[in-house]
Image (cartoon, rainbow, N blue to C red):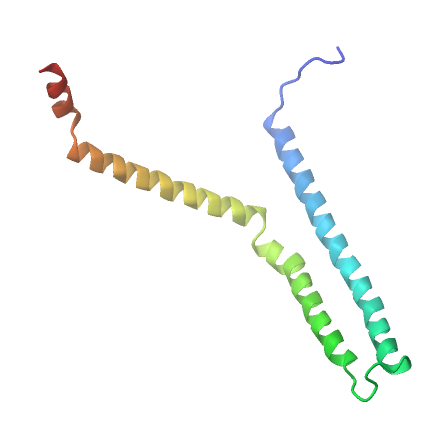
Length: 129
């Protein structure tokens, strides 16, 4: 049958998550490499504008511009290679589980507090009377 529904298993979902994660990482790395190429081309143009075209020739301002851009590129590379390694999907999952556990604990405390302040036996007696 062409359109018959098939039950999705956990393996398919896990494979789908892994594939989405890999595609996201590929996009991040592709953007980083594009940033690097644009940085190199931009640095050459800044040098050309300052030295050959003579824009503010008395001061080598291109050094500061390239340094600032290199810093931004380093931050981008740090984000892609370091931060994603330590704060990736596994870290997000652990944080989510911790927050859910805290919320469940807090809900349990509130339920105990409500049960001690307003016991069900007193409420049932009032309804019967």
